[in-house]
Structures are given as C-alpha cells and as structure tokens.
Image 1 (cartoon, rainbow, N blue to C red):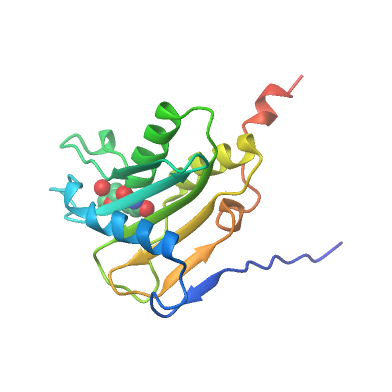
Image 2: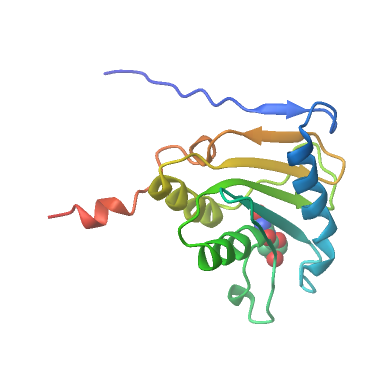
Amino acid sequence: MNKKSLNIEFIEYDSTNGIDEDLLGLIDQAEGNLHNAYAPYSNFKVSAVCKMANGEIVSGTNQENGAYPSGLCAERVAVFAAKSEFPNQNIDKIVITTEHSSEQPVSPCGACRQVLIEYETTQNQSIELILKSGDSKIWHFKSIKDLLPFAFDGASILKKD
Ligand code: THU
C-alpha cells in the first residue's frame, strides 16, 4: 500500500499590485463585459476572457435560459467561441470574473474544468487560469490540471481497443 498526496500551487495576489500589464488589461476587459451576461434567473453574472497564442482576445459571459439546463457558463461560452473562431490557435490564458465579492474567488464548475482540460491536453500547452470576484484576492493557476487532477482524458476512448 502506498499513501500518496497531491500538492497544488497557485499565486494569490491581495490586490492588482504586482500583476503584469497584459494580465491587468485582460482582467479589466473581463470585468467590463460583465454587463453582457444574460442571467435573469440567477442574477449571478460571470465573464470570461481567453487570450489566444496569436494575441486575439475572445470573450464570453454566462447565458441563461428559462429551460434551465439550456444555458451555458461564461467559461464555456468563451472557450467554445475562441476555438470556433481560431481552431488552430492555442489558448494561453483564461480570466474569469464575477461582480460578487467573496473571500475566495468564484471557481469554474466541474463541466467547465473538463472542457478546459481537453483543450489544454490536445494543444499540449498549459492554459493559465486567473480568477477574480469583485474585490476578492486574485488567484493565478499555471494549469487547468491544478483544478482538475486525475481528469478523464477523452483520448482513453480512442485507445480503448
Ligand atoms: N456560472 C458561470 O458562468 N461560471 C461558473 O464558473 C459558475 C457558474 C453561471 C452559470 C449560471 O448562469 C450562474 O452562474 C449561476 O450558477
């Protein structure tokens, strides 16, 4: 029997001090887009911005629907739009923001993590993930793997025989 453990590292910023200009711009853009969310049911607006390897920025906000499961989280709106528009470009970073201040910033749901990790795995380059909720501390992860260890890999389906 082996007892194993996992250590996850990330950077926590108390404020925007120390964050590079490029990332600050992305955070501003994500927060500036919050008003585009369509969240009449939850009243919980979320905004995500993807920075692609070619420098393009693609944004998304959560889009709800009266038939509840038909809506989509901001992260998936953003990454699906990004990969539809720029299928051959890697995603370098994704910034996720909400307007609701909380001690810990809001973190992506399990389904969004699964979608993000598949792009990370197939592009063979880590996707940085940055979280900020209102005036919360800012969390910066180097890889989606840090949020979804032991993830299911779609490649297992292709290798099954
Ligand atoms: N939501 C997101 O857009 N991203 C998250 O990471 C968590 C939740 C949305 C889904 C729904 O529109 C609202 O927030 C409340 O769950």
